[in-house]
Length: 122
Length: 400
Image (cartoon, rainbow over the protein chains, first blue to last red):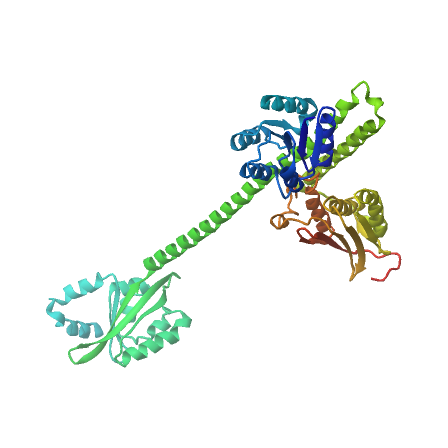
């Protein structure tokens, strides 16, 4: 079963994402960037769903860490930032992220985006 | 008679020619010129002296130099100084330059500078004095001073304007960020609720009652979170517009206990030990709703930012004040955020769940009740928030 790792500090958002995905995927959640770094080191996930605004260790810190350590995992950024377009462009240019979903459109877009990114990787 | 003698004395001077030429030259001098002899009798005064003193030379010639005092040419306060200089001149010493004001009979005053030095005319020692009109120089100096003052004023205003601009700009930046953070704070629970709703819309929703329950809980919790964000945001707006509080006698200890009771189950669910140490307290004249919001905010934040350990809520009445402390063993406040957390439009963490602006509201409420609020925090170890408000009215017979 395809595995999804979620790094998200908001429990309810993580729960919502898990509910959307757990029928089709094996879902693992790390609450916050700090725990996320630990999970990344030993994960066998096929895709990462990553929040950006997290205290202590942010999503950008995670992306930097992945780049520095050569961790190649498809990444979909899931965020509630206000200026979504500019953040998306910035992250696509800087980190070559694979997908982007606004938290407001989780219900409509998350599942499709995960399927889309995974299909591109096959 | 003295003028004749003077003319006789003058005629040999420098061989410039006739007495008329010499007098013409002296009368056209831009400076006043006078001569007095060794006993202080004025023997010569040119036209400029007439102009500066407002007296005809005939009024002065042949009279003692100090006659000036009788003519009220000098200001009273300057007479001792003038007498001293006159004495020095009589002893054959040069004087000046010294500044005086000459008063004219028409009431006008002229600033002047007087210098004198001894000269020998034949075998007689005379004293020649030069009186320079300082009106223009004083005017120029005053102008220069005024210009300098104006420039200084303009510089101060420019500086203040630049500071005000910077302040407005940073406030504007902060407001922009506030709007973005507020949007973030609303988008997150909205996203959760939409996911829950999408599940509830499924036909087989009742097939899994546990999941149904979970959805309803998610909607309930997140709609409350949205309501709080909206209320806090509107509260900030009210504060900006000059919020007034409705104060009345309030049973403070009951209010604090009610808040700790309200949050006890939430703390317990998170595995935290919420302890309340609240003795009977005097009634406090305050806005009960606003004050309760303060205590709720502090306790809620303590629970939110504490993953393990305990939270202590301690209230005391001491020295005419009520003090409330909320101490946690949580993650603490990052040092870089500590100076901003009470700032209006500042949210502690956009990544947290609805935190932040509550503290600026707390600060406003407490300060509006004549109190103070502060905190100590060690990142990774915990924070203690404390506020103190003065007890205005005392009831229940509690001694403070």
